[in-house]
Length: 494
Image (tube, rainbow, N blue to C red; front, top):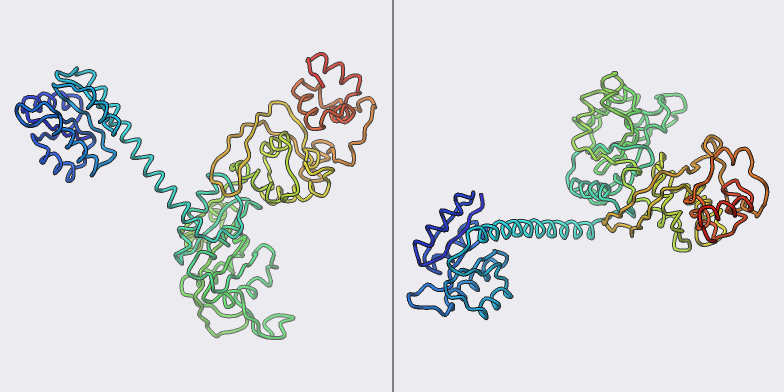
């Protein structure tokens, strides 16, 4: 409940205002002098002040109220103040309103008008305080990012911003972290940030891809092996835990760890103790473990493929990294980063890139950018360079600068890009730059099967191929004459 302070030397006025405001859901405090008012403002949480302009009998100058107003402003600059007086002085009212007085009313007041003013001013004050808090939080967050080592990560979405904020917050501790998310989304980058901003950043940082190690050698890789422990082990070797002693160990694809290895890993996490393969000597290490997986570990636990106790040891804090299609504002900053400063993107290409779902996430996007740069016929990359097809229904998108933290607005219908050779054969035939020679052939069965092009299709294709009719006609599966007829039909000028 908001508290309103009423300052007036007339007790009847204070009582009348208190009754009206309390009947409308407000809590009130009353006092009869400026000195009392300043004490209450300093001690209490006040949402609004209603003050008289004169406190000494037979005084009508308003100087006392003016002085009180400035004193309140000095200690509470944003506190809304409504000025009441029986002696309305326009010049004084204008002066104080310019200085920040929220309202100025004469006595007797209109109850409805006063209540309306009170409600509006309290709502605006609450919103102003909230905005100030958000601005302070944003400033603190940006300061933390400015001072942090982001390991070259590029982003522009709020979802990625929240992941990085959380990573920076938990990097200072030594607890185990589980990073979840699909393949190619950038889980290893988050692991880099966790280590680079931790107190262990100058200590060893060892990475192990569990999924890439043969099952029969996995335990030896993690915990080490003595000479003769298995065929081919000619000398003793340390494992990854020993190599990471005092630092950080990143276990990627942790869901692929076999049950026998899970038992040993659980023991190391609990006690720091383990034995090399083929040895009975217990060794002790202190290692911070960061793990990552694209698997559903809860499902693996239910099916008996993953130990529940190990899951809770690894998952002290979870960093959930969303797929790229859930953080579309990252796409253009990433593309600009991958293609470099020597290339730019046409507007239709930006639309198609943002609209494509990118099932392979950042890894697929990076490969597509590499291919586009190699196949590019000009410094301005087109949809054909990426293997993308113009589609109707696209709306404009706005790009982002890397690490801007400012979301862009994009609303597009998904195009049909070609992400791999197999996908090319299944979905559509790509139109790379070297295949775009001018031709006036009739449409083939494949091109005709795509359906009749709409006016929007033709306009997008014209923009994509800079108005070159032969190339536009081929991309749409039409002859030049057929394209001209449809342009005339839709009222499209070249």
